Image (cartoon, rainbow, N blue to C red; front, side):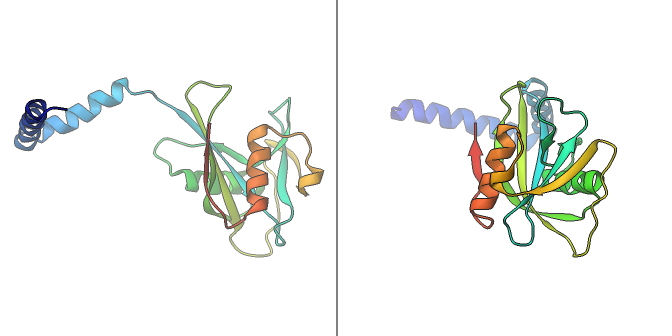
Length: 175
């Protein structure tokens, strides 16, 4: 960019900044206007809970998932809810287990639904001696090793592999 154009862009930006500082309410109005036209996303979370030896993962059999009933516990993020709190809440509601979200394992843009994100968290139990109590949305549960997995959706299979390969490892962004 040449010097004259850089000066014009600089003047334009300074003029906008000056107006927004003089009339701060316009900044909020601008943000609200942008929110009206920006894309909205739905977002779901699931959690990977490994056993004490970090060799098996907790799977649940879902009532409402006809094609692949086995998978990870999880659910939808409520309005203004933190994703880590969502997965902890969903786990408690579905399994009766108190868990703590350790870190995100995977964030994926949905392939079947437009404008949908899935976030997968690595979890750990929050206290010992807990008993699994399934909600009405689930039929059963089991602890499964990687070579004993029933058919699960690709996202769950990838998340389980990431959790088992490096329980303290990295976060991965995927498409």
